[in-house]
Structures are given as structure tokens and as C-alpha cells.
Length: 91
Image (tube, rainbow, N blue to C red; front, side):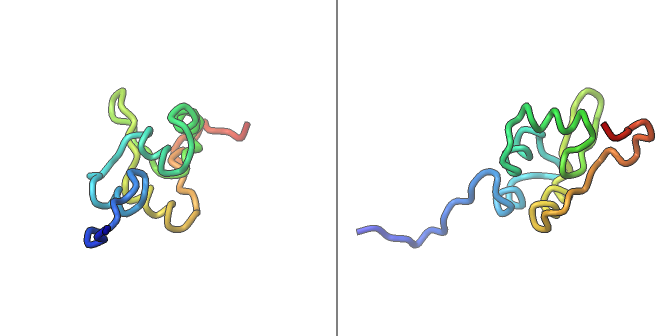
């Protein structure tokens, strides 16, 4: 007999898991998984200024803003970080 007293564990890329375990930022790899694409695709989107949520470049590190990630997952509307880069032009 199986008891289902414990709530189901959240998937590591689910909004519930992200809210419970991330601080103010997360890795590009983790955020990419939440969007359903690979780490390589995530970093490619970051380089092009097209990652679906806001990213911060801190020295050589790139971090994803947790609140932005959750808003995008909830709404489906991207929040691009590249808007402050004046040299970013459409390809």
C-alpha cells in the first residue's frame, strides 16, 4: 500500500522549485532548463542579447535574475536584457 502523505517533489526547473531554492539569481544552465533548452542554446541567446529574461554580467560570470525568470515563466512574455546595449542591432 502506498501512502501519498508527502507532497510531490518539485521538478528542479519548475517555478515552485525555483522560488523555494534560488536566491536573487541563478545560473544560465538552470534557467535554460526551466525554458526547455540546452545550456549551449542558453549561452548563445545570452551572447545575442536574446535570452528570454534578464541577465546580469558580474565580472566574467553571467547570472539570471530570478524574479525576471519567474515573471517570464508565468506570463510567457520575454524580458530581454539587451535593451541597454546601444550597439545591439537586428541581425
